[in-house]
Length: 241
Image (cartoon, rainbow, N blue to C red; front, side, top):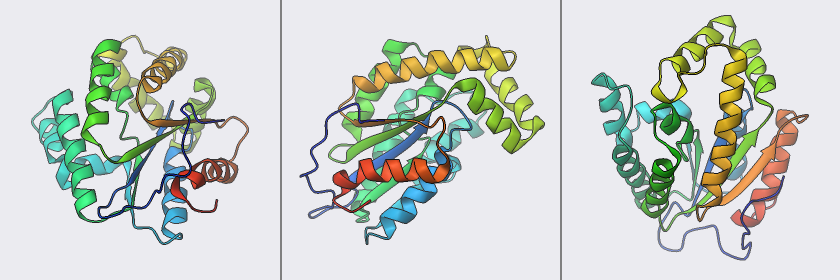
C-alpha cells in the first residue's frame, strides 16, 4: 500500500495566487470497495485543516455546469460520451475551480475514466491517449489518484449485500449492454472482467505523470482505510494525518 510514483513532500499543496492546487481522484477497481465512503471522509478531513474543498460526488457528472456537455450527450440518447467531451469538460471543471480559489478537489469515480471508456469499446492505446490529454488538460493542478482495490468477487458480493438483489440485475444488465463489456452475463464473468480492467488500469496509470496510491482494502474497514490514505496524503498536502 505505497504510492506507485515517487512524491516530493516538500512541495506546497496550497495555492500561491490561484486555487485548485491538488486534485485527489478516488477510484475503485470494483463496486463495493468503499470509494464513496472514503471520499466523504477525506473531504471532511481536508476541510478541517482549513483548506477549501470541493467534493465531487459520482452523480455530479450529470449536474455540474462544467459537465453539462456530458449530460447533454446522455440526454440525447447517446450510449457513450465522446473522449473529447470528457477532456474538455474536465479542463473546464478544474479551470473553474482554480478561478474560484478552491484548494483541493476530491472526486469520486471521475478521473481516470477507465471503466467508462472500456465499456464504450475503446482499446488500450485509445484510452492511453485520452489519459495523456486529460493530464495536460488539468495542468498545473497536481493529481493524486487513490485507487482502492479488492478481490472482485468479494467486492461485488459486498455491493450486492449493500444495495440489494435488484442492484445485481442492474449492474449485470448494464455491462452486458455495453460494447466493451458484452462478455459479462453473470457474477463470475463480471468478476473476470473487473480483474482484466484492474490490470489495464494499473498499466495506464503507471504511464501518467500523476501520483498513484494503490490501496488493497482486503481486511480493512472504512476507518482503517481512511487512516491509511490520510497518512499517505498528509505529506502531499502539508498537513497532519
